[in-house]
Image 1: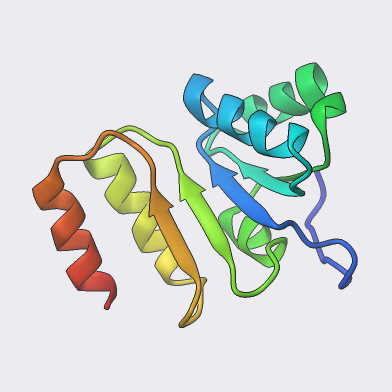
Image 2: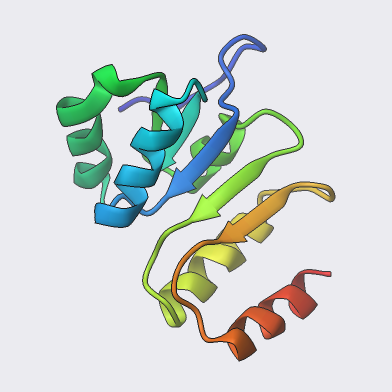
Length: 125
């Protein structure tokens, strides 16, 4: 996959990072319901598999890097995280936070411990 430089017409409505079973199915559901969906996974092969197996479900914008993923989102950006709870979630939030702007939204849709969620929310304020 090449680096993504979007034109105003080529931006996704929403993004999902984490293309395991739950993340890929959430992205597919969003795409089937008319949303343009940016997708990303740390392991590029999982992103490529979603496109190969389900690219016809709707409009997807695959990205190899988190920077390209964020660049492919319309502002204000909405990124949904579907990765393992704990350290992996912290790592993704930290990376996203460095690329996003005030007013952008990060949704941790994983199975996080509520105290972790509170800590993350406080850190992002």
